[in-house]
Length: 381
Image 1 (cartoon, rainbow, N blue to C red):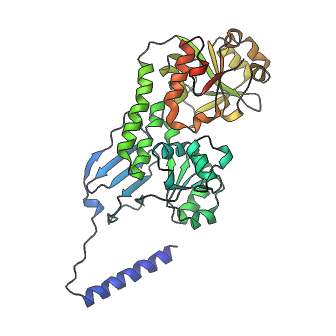
Image 2: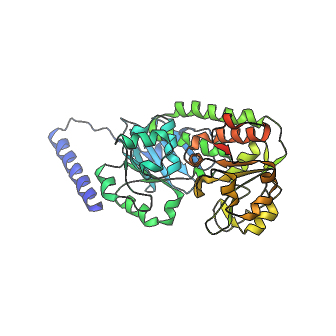
Image 3: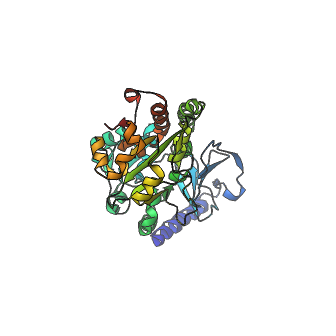
Protein backbone atom coordinates (compact mmCIF):
# COMPACT_ATOMS: atom_id res chain seq x y z
CA UNK A 1 0.00 0.00 0.00
CA UNK A 2 2.91 2.34 0.68
CA UNK A 3 4.20 1.72 -2.88
CA UNK A 4 0.78 2.57 -4.30
CA UNK A 5 0.65 5.72 -2.23
CA UNK A 6 4.14 6.66 -3.39
CA UNK A 7 3.18 6.18 -7.03
CA UNK A 8 0.10 8.38 -6.62
CA UNK A 9 2.16 11.07 -4.88
CA UNK A 10 4.81 10.96 -7.61
CA UNK A 11 2.14 11.18 -10.32
CA UNK A 12 0.58 14.19 -8.62
CA UNK A 13 3.96 15.90 -8.31
CA UNK A 14 4.72 15.22 -11.99
CA UNK A 15 1.33 16.62 -13.05
CA UNK A 16 1.93 19.71 -10.92
CA UNK A 17 5.33 20.28 -12.57
CA UNK A 18 3.72 20.03 -16.03
CA UNK A 19 1.04 22.58 -15.09
CA UNK A 20 3.64 25.00 -13.77
CA UNK A 21 5.69 24.56 -16.95
CA UNK A 22 2.70 25.07 -19.26
CA UNK A 23 1.22 27.88 -17.15
CA UNK A 24 4.17 29.85 -15.73
CA UNK A 25 1.87 32.59 -14.46
CA UNK A 26 -0.20 30.20 -12.37
CA UNK A 27 0.40 30.49 -8.62
CA UNK A 28 -0.02 27.53 -6.26
CA UNK A 29 -1.17 28.06 -2.68
CA UNK A 30 1.24 26.49 -0.23
CA UNK A 31 -0.28 24.26 2.42
CA UNK A 32 0.01 25.51 6.00
CA UNK A 33 3.02 24.20 7.90
CA UNK A 34 1.90 22.35 11.04
CA UNK A 35 5.16 23.21 12.79
CA UNK A 36 4.40 26.92 12.46
CA UNK A 37 0.77 26.63 13.61
CA UNK A 38 0.00 28.04 17.05
CA UNK A 39 -2.53 26.81 19.59
CA UNK A 40 -5.45 29.21 19.80
CA UNK A 41 -7.06 27.60 22.85
CA UNK A 42 -7.64 24.26 24.56
CA UNK A 43 -10.89 22.50 25.41
CA UNK A 44 -12.01 23.04 29.00
CA UNK A 45 -12.68 19.74 30.78
CA UNK A 46 -14.27 19.54 34.21
CA UNK A 47 -13.79 15.87 35.08
CA UNK A 48 -12.16 13.92 32.25
CA UNK A 49 -8.39 13.47 32.41
CA UNK A 50 -7.86 10.73 29.82
CA UNK A 51 -7.88 13.03 26.79
CA UNK A 52 -7.24 16.64 25.80
CA UNK A 53 -8.02 18.81 22.77
CA UNK A 54 -5.97 21.73 21.49
CA UNK A 55 -7.48 24.05 18.87
CA UNK A 56 -5.33 25.78 16.26
CA UNK A 57 -6.07 28.72 14.02
CA UNK A 58 -8.24 27.73 11.11
CA UNK A 59 -10.35 25.36 13.21
CA UNK A 60 -7.86 22.48 13.30
CA UNK A 61 -8.11 20.37 16.46
CA UNK A 62 -5.47 18.06 17.92
CA UNK A 63 -6.87 15.26 20.10
CA UNK A 64 -4.44 13.58 22.50
CA UNK A 65 -5.47 10.41 24.37
CA UNK A 66 -3.80 9.04 27.49
CA UNK A 67 -2.26 6.13 25.58
CA UNK A 68 -0.19 8.70 23.67
CA UNK A 69 -2.15 8.52 20.43
CA UNK A 70 -2.86 11.81 18.61
CA UNK A 71 -5.38 12.77 15.94
CA UNK A 72 -5.48 15.99 13.93
CA UNK A 73 -9.02 16.84 12.88
CA UNK A 74 -9.02 18.86 9.65
CA UNK A 75 -12.17 20.99 9.12
CA UNK A 76 -14.15 20.49 5.93
CA UNK A 77 -12.74 22.68 3.16
CA UNK A 78 -9.34 23.07 4.83
CA UNK A 79 -6.11 21.56 3.52
CA UNK A 80 -4.12 19.00 5.45
CA UNK A 81 -1.09 20.79 6.92
CA UNK A 82 2.44 19.89 5.89
CA UNK A 83 5.12 18.57 8.26
CA UNK A 84 2.70 16.80 10.60
CA UNK A 85 4.52 14.36 12.89
CA UNK A 86 4.33 10.75 11.73
CA UNK A 87 2.55 9.57 14.88
CA UNK A 88 -0.38 11.96 14.33
CA UNK A 89 -3.32 10.46 12.43
CA UNK A 90 -5.17 12.79 10.06
CA UNK A 91 -8.98 12.82 10.26
CA UNK A 92 -10.78 14.86 7.62
CA UNK A 93 -14.26 16.22 8.25
CA UNK A 94 -16.96 15.35 7.62
CA UNK A 95 -16.32 12.02 9.35
CA UNK A 96 -18.25 9.22 7.67
CA UNK A 97 -18.40 5.42 7.52
CA UNK A 98 -17.07 4.82 11.03
CA UNK A 99 -16.65 1.34 12.50
CA UNK A 100 -17.67 1.54 16.17
CA UNK A 101 -16.48 -1.57 17.97
CA UNK A 102 -16.39 0.06 21.44
CA UNK A 103 -19.90 -0.65 22.67
CA UNK A 104 -19.91 2.16 25.24
CA UNK A 105 -18.92 4.70 22.57
CA UNK A 106 -22.04 4.35 20.44
CA UNK A 107 -24.18 6.24 22.95
CA UNK A 108 -22.13 9.39 22.32
CA UNK A 109 -23.00 9.29 18.62
CA UNK A 110 -26.67 8.74 19.48
CA UNK A 111 -26.68 11.60 21.99
CA UNK A 112 -25.15 13.97 19.42
CA UNK A 113 -27.69 12.85 16.80
CA UNK A 114 -24.85 11.67 14.57
CA UNK A 115 -25.71 8.04 13.93
CA UNK A 116 -25.40 8.83 10.22
CA UNK A 117 -21.63 9.01 10.71
CA UNK A 118 -21.60 5.33 11.75
CA UNK A 119 -21.84 2.66 9.07
CA UNK A 120 -20.33 -0.36 10.83
CA UNK A 121 -20.93 -1.86 14.27
CA UNK A 122 -18.95 -4.31 16.37
CA UNK A 123 -22.16 -5.40 18.13
CA UNK A 124 -25.03 -7.12 16.35
CA UNK A 125 -28.63 -5.91 16.42
CA UNK A 126 -29.96 -8.17 19.19
CA UNK A 127 -27.28 -7.10 21.67
CA UNK A 128 -27.88 -3.36 21.47
CA UNK A 129 -29.65 -1.52 24.29
CA UNK A 130 -29.00 1.89 22.72
CA UNK A 131 -32.26 2.44 20.82
CA UNK A 132 -30.74 4.58 18.07
CA UNK A 133 -28.10 1.93 17.32
CA UNK A 134 -30.57 -0.93 17.25
CA UNK A 135 -32.99 0.98 15.03
CA UNK A 136 -30.22 2.00 12.63
CA UNK A 137 -29.20 -1.64 12.26
CA UNK A 138 -32.79 -2.80 11.80
CA UNK A 139 -33.16 -0.28 8.98
CA UNK A 140 -29.88 -1.35 7.36
CA UNK A 141 -28.20 2.01 7.91
CA UNK A 142 -25.58 0.37 10.14
CA UNK A 143 -24.33 -3.16 9.48
CA UNK A 144 -22.60 -5.68 11.68
CA UNK A 145 -18.91 -5.88 10.78
CA UNK A 146 -17.71 -8.41 13.35
CA UNK A 147 -16.56 -8.11 16.95
CA UNK A 148 -13.54 -6.05 17.93
CA UNK A 149 -11.34 -9.17 17.94
CA UNK A 150 -12.61 -10.62 14.65
CA UNK A 151 -13.67 -7.79 12.31
CA UNK A 152 -14.81 -8.39 8.75
CA UNK A 153 -11.94 -6.60 7.03
CA UNK A 154 -13.39 -7.06 3.54
CA UNK A 155 -16.69 -5.46 4.55
CA UNK A 156 -14.94 -2.65 6.44
CA UNK A 157 -12.80 -1.82 3.41
CA UNK A 158 -15.74 -2.03 1.01
CA UNK A 159 -17.59 0.60 3.08
CA UNK A 160 -14.69 3.05 2.86
CA UNK A 161 -14.19 3.10 6.63
CA UNK A 162 -12.46 6.30 7.77
CA UNK A 163 -11.97 5.49 11.45
CA UNK A 164 -12.29 2.51 13.80
CA UNK A 165 -13.37 3.28 17.38
CA UNK A 166 -12.19 0.55 19.75
CA UNK A 167 -12.26 -0.06 23.49
CA UNK A 168 -9.10 -0.94 25.40
CA UNK A 169 -10.02 -4.59 24.82
CA UNK A 170 -8.31 -4.20 21.44
CA UNK A 171 -4.98 -4.51 23.25
CA UNK A 172 -5.80 -8.17 23.88
CA UNK A 173 -5.71 -8.55 20.09
CA UNK A 174 -3.05 -6.09 18.92
CA UNK A 175 -2.87 -7.78 15.52
CA UNK A 176 -6.34 -6.40 14.73
CA UNK A 177 -5.21 -2.82 15.35
CA UNK A 178 -2.10 -3.45 13.26
CA UNK A 179 -4.19 -4.88 10.43
CA UNK A 180 -6.59 -1.92 10.41
CA UNK A 181 -3.67 0.50 10.43
CA UNK A 182 -2.09 -1.48 7.61
CA UNK A 183 -5.20 -0.87 5.53
CA UNK A 184 -4.85 2.85 6.20
CA UNK A 185 -7.67 2.98 8.76
CA UNK A 186 -6.86 5.03 11.89
CA UNK A 187 -7.81 3.41 15.21
CA UNK A 188 -9.02 5.54 18.12
CA UNK A 189 -9.00 3.66 21.42
CA UNK A 190 -11.63 4.93 23.85
CA UNK A 191 -10.16 5.30 27.34
CA UNK A 192 -13.33 6.59 28.98
CA UNK A 193 -13.46 3.46 31.16
CA UNK A 194 -10.23 4.67 32.81
CA UNK A 195 -11.89 7.82 34.12
CA UNK A 196 -12.17 7.64 37.91
CA UNK A 197 -15.06 10.08 38.08
CA UNK A 198 -18.32 8.95 36.42
CA UNK A 199 -18.82 12.41 34.94
CA UNK A 200 -15.37 12.01 33.42
CA UNK A 201 -16.76 9.11 31.40
CA UNK A 202 -19.77 11.17 30.40
CA UNK A 203 -17.52 14.09 29.39
CA UNK A 204 -16.05 11.97 26.59
CA UNK A 205 -19.03 13.17 24.57
CA UNK A 206 -16.89 16.27 24.02
CA UNK A 207 -14.14 14.24 22.34
CA UNK A 208 -16.60 12.72 19.88
CA UNK A 209 -18.11 16.14 19.27
CA UNK A 210 -14.73 17.30 17.95
CA UNK A 211 -14.76 14.53 15.34
CA UNK A 212 -18.30 15.41 14.34
CA UNK A 213 -18.18 19.22 14.56
CA UNK A 214 -20.76 19.25 17.37
CA UNK A 215 -18.88 20.98 20.19
CA UNK A 216 -21.67 23.41 21.09
CA UNK A 217 -24.21 20.60 21.30
CA UNK A 218 -21.88 18.53 23.48
CA UNK A 219 -21.35 21.42 25.90
CA UNK A 220 -25.10 21.80 26.39
CA UNK A 221 -25.67 18.06 26.79
CA UNK A 222 -22.89 17.68 29.32
CA UNK A 223 -24.09 20.66 31.34
CA UNK A 224 -27.53 19.04 31.64
CA UNK A 225 -26.10 15.64 32.63
CA UNK A 226 -23.74 17.18 35.19
CA UNK A 227 -26.58 19.18 36.71
CA UNK A 228 -28.49 15.95 37.47
CA UNK A 229 -25.58 14.67 39.52
CA UNK A 230 -24.79 18.00 41.18
CA UNK A 231 -28.36 18.30 42.46
CA UNK A 232 -28.06 14.93 44.21
CA UNK A 233 -24.48 15.57 45.30
CA UNK A 234 -25.57 18.64 47.25
CA UNK A 235 -27.39 16.39 49.74
CA UNK A 236 -25.57 15.07 52.81
CA UNK A 237 -24.24 11.52 52.96
CA UNK A 238 -26.80 8.96 54.10
CA UNK A 239 -24.15 6.93 55.91
CA UNK A 240 -25.53 3.76 54.30
CA UNK A 241 -23.16 1.15 52.90
CA UNK A 242 -23.58 -0.48 49.48
CA UNK A 243 -22.13 -3.70 48.05
CA UNK A 244 -21.91 -3.79 44.24
CA UNK A 245 -20.97 -7.18 42.73
CA UNK A 246 -21.91 -10.23 40.71
CA UNK A 247 -21.22 -13.95 41.16
CA UNK A 248 -19.03 -15.48 38.44
CA UNK A 249 -19.60 -18.86 36.83
CA UNK A 250 -16.69 -20.14 38.95
CA UNK A 251 -18.37 -19.05 42.16
CA UNK A 252 -16.31 -15.95 42.91
CA UNK A 253 -17.73 -12.57 43.87
CA UNK A 254 -16.59 -10.02 41.29
CA UNK A 255 -16.32 -6.56 42.87
CA UNK A 256 -15.17 -3.12 41.73
CA UNK A 257 -11.94 -1.75 43.10
CA UNK A 258 -12.07 1.12 45.55
CA UNK A 259 -10.91 3.71 43.02
CA UNK A 260 -13.33 2.60 40.30
CA UNK A 261 -15.91 5.02 38.95
CA UNK A 262 -18.79 2.81 40.21
CA UNK A 263 -17.52 3.27 43.75
CA UNK A 264 -17.48 7.02 43.07
CA UNK A 265 -21.07 6.87 41.79
CA UNK A 266 -22.19 5.31 45.06
CA UNK A 267 -20.36 8.03 46.97
CA UNK A 268 -21.92 10.80 44.86
CA UNK A 269 -25.34 9.26 45.51
CA UNK A 270 -24.83 9.67 49.26
CA UNK A 271 -23.75 6.12 50.02
CA UNK A 272 -20.52 4.44 51.10
CA UNK A 273 -19.01 1.69 48.96
CA UNK A 274 -18.52 -1.28 51.29
CA UNK A 275 -15.15 -2.19 49.75
CA UNK A 276 -13.61 1.23 50.37
CA UNK A 277 -10.30 -0.25 51.48
CA UNK A 278 -9.54 -2.69 48.66
CA UNK A 279 -5.92 -2.75 47.53
CA UNK A 280 -5.80 -0.58 44.41
CA UNK A 281 -2.02 -0.78 43.99
CA UNK A 282 -2.46 -3.79 41.75
CA UNK A 283 -0.12 -4.74 38.93
CA UNK A 284 -2.88 -4.59 36.34
CA UNK A 285 -5.26 -1.93 35.13
CA UNK A 286 -8.46 -3.92 35.61
CA UNK A 287 -11.20 -2.09 37.48
CA UNK A 288 -12.57 -5.29 39.05
CA UNK A 289 -11.27 -8.20 41.08
CA UNK A 290 -12.54 -11.63 42.14
CA UNK A 291 -13.00 -12.58 45.79
CA UNK A 292 -13.49 -15.98 47.37
CA UNK A 293 -17.05 -16.10 48.70
CA UNK A 294 -15.82 -16.53 52.28
CA UNK A 295 -13.79 -13.32 52.04
CA UNK A 296 -16.68 -11.54 50.33
CA UNK A 297 -19.02 -12.67 53.09
CA UNK A 298 -16.72 -11.34 55.79
CA UNK A 299 -16.43 -7.92 54.15
CA UNK A 300 -19.95 -7.40 52.77
CA UNK A 301 -22.43 -9.27 54.98
CA UNK A 302 -23.27 -6.12 56.96
CA UNK A 303 -23.81 -3.86 53.93
CA UNK A 304 -27.08 -1.94 54.17
CA UNK A 305 -27.81 -2.36 50.46
CA UNK A 306 -26.90 -4.85 47.75
CA UNK A 307 -26.78 -3.85 44.08
CA UNK A 308 -26.28 -6.88 41.84
CA UNK A 309 -24.40 -6.11 38.63
CA UNK A 310 -26.35 -7.91 35.90
CA UNK A 311 -24.43 -6.48 32.95
CA UNK A 312 -22.09 -9.50 32.79
CA UNK A 313 -23.97 -12.30 34.47
CA UNK A 314 -27.46 -11.52 33.15
CA UNK A 315 -30.46 -9.91 34.82
CA UNK A 316 -32.01 -11.60 37.81
CA UNK A 317 -35.78 -11.73 38.26
CA UNK A 318 -36.18 -12.75 41.89
CA UNK A 319 -34.40 -12.90 45.22
CA UNK A 320 -34.47 -16.71 44.98
CA UNK A 321 -32.33 -16.51 41.82
CA UNK A 322 -29.74 -14.49 43.70
CA UNK A 323 -29.72 -16.85 46.69
CA UNK A 324 -29.33 -19.77 44.29
CA UNK A 325 -25.89 -18.42 43.37
CA UNK A 326 -24.59 -18.76 46.94
CA UNK A 327 -26.25 -19.89 50.15
CA UNK A 328 -24.02 -17.47 52.07
CA UNK A 329 -26.01 -14.52 50.71
CA UNK A 330 -29.04 -15.50 52.76
CA UNK A 331 -27.36 -14.23 55.94
CA UNK A 332 -26.57 -10.78 54.50
CA UNK A 333 -28.12 -7.82 56.31
CA UNK A 334 -29.45 -6.34 53.05
CA UNK A 335 -31.17 -9.63 52.18
CA UNK A 336 -32.73 -9.88 55.64
CA UNK A 337 -34.03 -6.30 55.44
CA UNK A 338 -35.22 -6.46 51.82
CA UNK A 339 -32.72 -3.99 50.37
CA UNK A 340 -31.55 -6.00 47.37
CA UNK A 341 -31.52 -4.34 43.96
CA UNK A 342 -30.47 -5.35 40.48
CA UNK A 343 -28.86 -3.14 37.83
CA UNK A 344 -30.32 -3.46 34.34
CA UNK A 345 -28.10 -4.72 31.51
CA UNK A 346 -28.20 -1.49 29.56
CA UNK A 347 -26.20 0.75 31.90
CA UNK A 348 -22.75 0.08 30.46
CA UNK A 349 -23.99 0.80 26.93
CA UNK A 350 -25.93 3.93 27.85
CA UNK A 351 -22.80 5.76 28.92
CA UNK A 352 -24.36 9.21 28.86
CA UNK A 353 -26.99 8.11 31.41
CA UNK A 354 -24.60 7.56 34.31
CA UNK A 355 -26.08 10.63 35.99
CA UNK A 356 -29.47 8.92 36.05
CA UNK A 357 -27.91 5.83 37.66
CA UNK A 358 -26.47 8.02 40.42
CA UNK A 359 -29.90 9.56 40.94
CA UNK A 360 -31.38 6.03 41.09
CA UNK A 361 -28.90 4.97 43.78
CA UNK A 362 -29.61 8.13 45.76
CA UNK A 363 -33.34 7.43 45.48
CA UNK A 364 -33.16 3.88 46.86
CA UNK A 365 -31.01 5.12 49.74
CA UNK A 366 -33.41 7.90 50.71
CA UNK A 367 -36.94 6.83 49.76
CA UNK A 368 -39.15 4.01 51.06
CA UNK A 369 -40.94 2.95 47.85
CA UNK A 370 -38.97 4.29 44.90
CA UNK A 371 -39.56 1.57 42.27
CA UNK A 372 -41.72 3.64 39.92
CA UNK A 373 -39.25 6.53 39.71
CA UNK A 374 -36.16 4.46 38.79
CA UNK A 375 -34.50 4.14 35.40
CA UNK A 376 -31.81 1.46 35.81
CA UNK A 377 -32.45 -0.27 39.15
CA UNK A 378 -35.21 -2.65 40.18
CA UNK A 379 -35.86 -4.44 43.45
CA UNK A 380 -35.47 -8.20 43.85
CA UNK A 381 -38.33 -9.78 45.78
